[in-house]
Length: 330
Image (cartoon, rainbow, N blue to C red):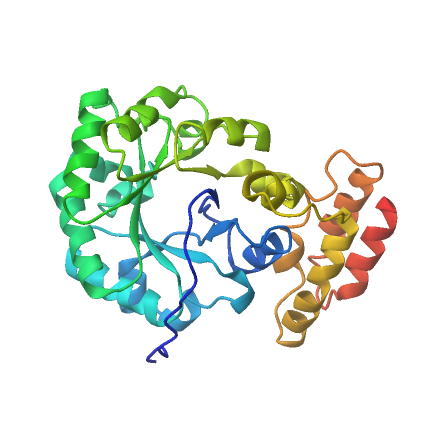
């Protein structure tokens, strides 16, 4: 089925972003996260270019208008196939196309995309140029500071220089290297040490590029400090496991007015979306699994999580399950 032409005119800025996270940042989670911040740039889970070519593109690219600004992350290494995927992404309304050059999982390596592509900067540059030639929206890269024993500052700068030559102007850099063998994806998020200095070096060498730093950021205070050295910050697991942290993003990082709203207020704002999805036949568990961390550290939070975990998965579970869970934290 051909996707409609929904070209966006949303202004993209990378000052604060929420990372693409497989199995986490699906469309339901992105709508939920949008309740907390109007300014955060959201990213989809990675979608492979092959899946869009051979699968149901309409299903894979569906998203809610409230998600904007939102970027589509693609995985792949075939420049022509990626160009077609980027074009589909633009036509379905995404505000940016991002190429995954950072995921270290075996599944990704076997498909010749992800972090292993850092070993072939000219190929990444070719992919970027091909995608950029197919769309009018920004095409960006998310990468690591290096892979295996190819993790020197010089090699990172060479990678960025080469890929920038393909037309990339925004680099989102996870400040850990990726071990392509010997570590699981989960271990690759923690075991390699953080090296922010290498990311700072990219910004110093290429001041005209937008450099966004990712990895180990768990507070808006640390994000604000990092913004003195780079153009943007990207939060990953902290934003998912503690979504309430996003409520202060617009005021703390964009100088907008402080909005006094409770966790329950944000959840209340999300209820109409849940009810609409339930009416379409979407199981409640698809939404509530993203809500487990909302009341983290609050009185009654364990009972809230337990109630959702034990009841949202039941057949025909409805909005009453969520309302009953909220009662534990009021």
